[in-house]
Length: 174
Image (tube, rainbow, N blue to C red):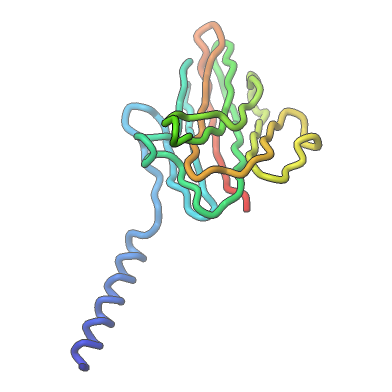
């Protein structure tokens, strides 16, 4: 019986050591997209980093549902775009989308207005009970709960070969 107890203790200690060594999520660079993202923990983060990103659409999804943000316990999320520099005349929007499993499509919950200026952080929110009418100027919100599978989308448009530099970051709301 003593050997059995010592074996269990060793197994538990070994498991704890592995958890401590490998349990912390790390930021990963998605090859050839320039998108960095973190798999969310309890506080959650979805991140798009732009370095002279040209016109086009960028999603935080890596591949199918397994790459989306997976929300297990949070009721909402706030995402903020902060453009620090630009080239040409960019017009950027950010959106929070959810995966509709019956139709197997991504649907938009909330989209920002067009963002054109540097150093003017713009936020979008999805959270039930939010007082949409009393939000600060430029902030857009959806009075809805955050679904299980969601992603952040950024669309850069504009004219004169638009580019944008900056970040979009998200945090879960309890």
